[in-house]
Length: 77
Image 1 (cartoon, rainbow, N blue to C red):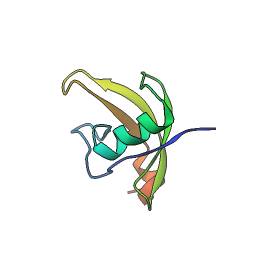
Image 2: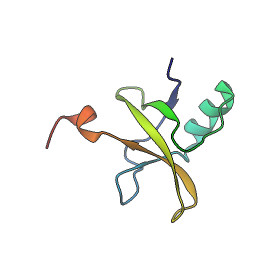
Image 3: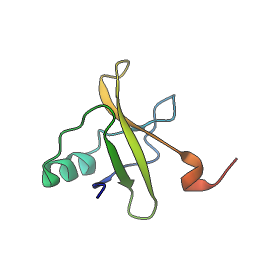
Image 4: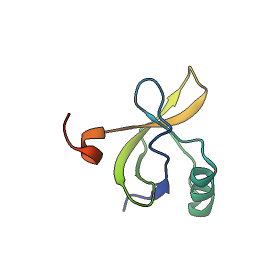
């Protein structure tokens, strides 16, 4: 089963990856006893929208991010 954590979909980096640095994200990771690693698959949710994401480390911003399929949230462009 893929763990679900909070993500703010409006908090994306220039590459369109969702930053995993919000307080809600950190609280969910702690509650679930999870440590992020590259390639990890998580279900990201803001309470209304949900999508799977693959965790990556952003060397530019020195933080964990998740690559998601935006069309799965909002449909194709």
